[in-house]
Image 1 (cartoon, helix red, strand yellow):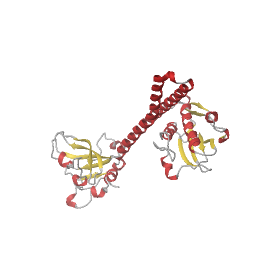
Image 2 (cartoon, rainbow, N blue to C red):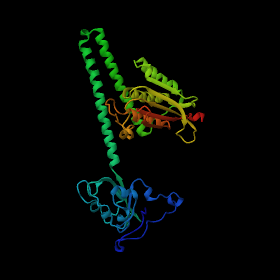
Image 3 (cartoon, one colour):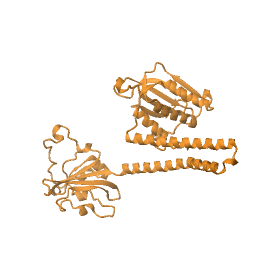
Length: 381
């Protein structure tokens, strides 16, 4: 798509192109960027107020084809209004306003029909107080920001809901014990204290999940690599379920040898395994099968990796939900929990340079498969 040029009636067009690269500019060193490659909308008007650049992002954001925008007056191509319904170009008057004005800071503006945009403008002058030679406008869609705001609101609501129940229990039992300690038997006291202890663990887990999400979202999730025996790690989780009352025959662990030496964060690998096996036990049916196999590395420059597949024989995950499994707050058909576990699992696997997928198992249930590169710490590379 051409984004710099003119079209339409001759009397409405200014065919002069944007100025070429100057000495020292990135474009002059071969690092120029086509306006269509920019992630934000870019609109440029010349000294007469006619649009000479309208990139692909601007066309997408405004739903106005580039060919229809080029050559039109800026206020016609972008009929922006502020949130009080006032015409923005008349208010700011870039060409006839104060000569010392350099532009407009980013603000929320509306297109006809109520579409909201984030708009900022810069006035380009040949000298500090000279006439405006170019008006450069940046456009950003607010939808991504709205999704982020909604996600944050949902997270706060979820946390408040999940904290309310255990904290109410803790407060109720401790207050009762303090007020009527002598009235309860030792068995009753033990039961209440065990409940308080379990609820305190629940709060601790939730706080740990929130910290993990914060680190994942900010790209600060640290991975402390050590040698990891994946077969032994899975075996420990199975033994814990059997000790808690699950039938040993419900689990099938298959390890294909030889496995490559794996360097990963053992605590975070345990967190991934715990979540995936717990999901299979709680939400699946039949045998929970864990396959550990060598595989191609998901990271460039390495030949081998280790894959772990956790599958069950339950109803599985509906096809229409497959693409939402690793998003925040996805809980499937059975409610319960925060819906943050699989989001964290994906973040941990990707922090290791790995990949994770979900599909349908041979037995019809859900199948989660993650692959980690063998990796080595930097001091051994």
